[in-house]
Image (tube, rainbow, N blue to C red; front, top):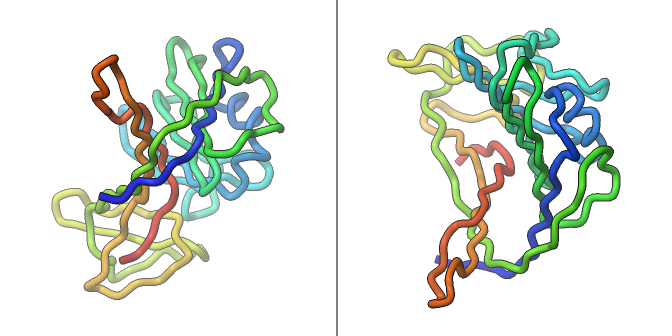
Length: 191
């Protein structure tokens, strides 16, 4: 296990806001971000378009009405949003570099910590029928059906897609015990 030292920067929204407002407030930092959206009906992956909308593999603007949790991420930062009541909720952004272009967010004290790269295997194999949209791939499995993912990199049937993350570790008590204090989604990658 190899860790590296880093500084973690955290920002919290000044008050409750909609997901659309949270994205607009952080849009410069989130350029090219991938969105992981949870609703009662599904878990969906989308891409943040330059106009601030979230779009699916068919380049359709997604309806965010039923989304109760969202994580938008790129190599620089991650925006987290949680619906608290009627489409308004809490928003926070984490990054390893200071962010200057956030509207309506307040910074907390930067925290020095250890960083550990991690990864999660996405369920499914490369599907025979792929989406027609450029920079999208389709995973499929008999148990879960199909999942379109925003990934430009092509891959073979025997390769898998991973969600790369970074865990942030720090001492959590006076005895030197270390725990994961944050986790940041970073990118999708074929391996």
